[in-house]
Length: 414
Image (cartoon, rainbow, N blue to C red; front, side):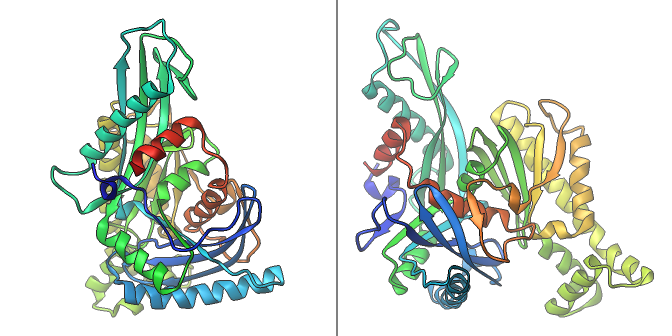
């Protein structure tokens, strides 16, 4: 593999801030229809959000660098203004962190088992490096079609390491007949990577780090494992995680916008009026008769969303060859629609899905995200958890990586 094929995307043009001093990052959650820009102070491994701005962008995945730069620059100026008011000082962000959502990624984790010819000999670092290299190649090759070079590796992290089937944090020094590794890899289109690089260069950021938003979300979840169902504007993103690392991600081309489009088709309304009508329904501002008239054309879209979500979860379970975890978490702006929430609750009774035990569905609130302090008045909505998780992830990057993560990072850059 060439360096361009493997390197997780970090573009550096000036020396970054020392790890001992606080750093100020601009954290960007592109979303499927809403751009969120946060001003984050990172000291040690603690992240504090001082500034926040968000705006509707349509589909940011297809936006060019010029339009993204213009909208982003306005949002950043407003976020920095909020940060100044809150912190009573100017926080100049020279580092840019962008978390690409599942809709702009391919991501999965596959296990590799390696038999050892000398089980009595302790595992050494070279053996671990060979194992992780095999697991990384397997993940990347399965995510990318043969001869496909327009998808680049964003991140690769060790999900699980084993010696004779028993979980370990680092197999070096252990003896055994076999060692195993499960590595999660996330790939993104080269065009998307190039677009964000151009945005960072246009605004003169010292550092650009592109990462996979599901990786940040998994690291911020308090439970051992579960599935997050994030109902956004244009898409619904699914993240199955275990021990703070993602196992599988998927994205469905349906979200809150699908309900708006159903009203648009039924009544021939302009998009903005259809959206306003949907919001009035959600807010309870319509009469009983009007509510029934608005709900009727949206119900088929809700049923279609449920069928797609159920099918995706079933495929995840089948592909991983294990039952789904029993904890499901629901978030995203689309969950403001009560019928979406009720449809999601029916997943726990699905005869098509296998769970490890009787499942439960809970909302993922922004306050459930660990590792971040939010000092703003924003970030309280059902769609704000992933952005806060990304801010927390930026803080965790100040911690020294353990040996397996360090080796995997070196393999990606080789």
